[in-house]
Length: 114
Image (cartoon, rainbow, N blue to C red; front, side):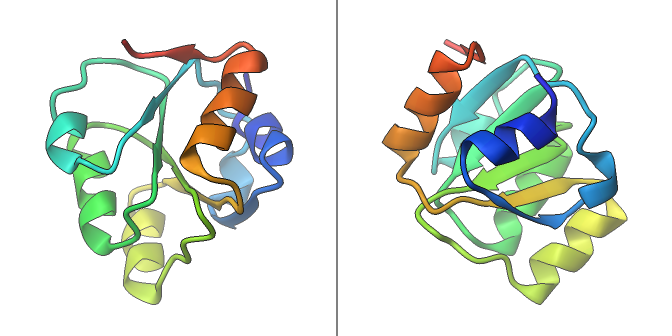
C-alpha cells in the first residue's frame, strides 16, 4: 500500500515528506516503547506511535523506518521536522487512537509485524 493511501485512510495530515507519498509499505508496528522498535528487522514498515518527541525520529532512523504515524493528535515539533527532513522521512499526524488507527490499517490489508 502506498503511504499516501494510508494518510487518506487515517484522515492524517502529512507534515513532512509530501513528495515521498508514493512509497510502498507492507506492515505496521504500533508501539510507544522505542526499545521494542529497535528490535525490528523488517523492510517497508510504518511505525505508529503516540510518543511525540525527537527520540522517536532518532529511533526510526536507527531502525531504517522511513514513515511514522503520530496518533492521538500528537503534533510534530520543529526539531522533529528538521531531523525527519534530513533523513527523507514521512511524518503523519493522525487524530485517531492507536487502537482505531491500527484497526483501520489492518482492515485495509496491512500486516502486523507479530
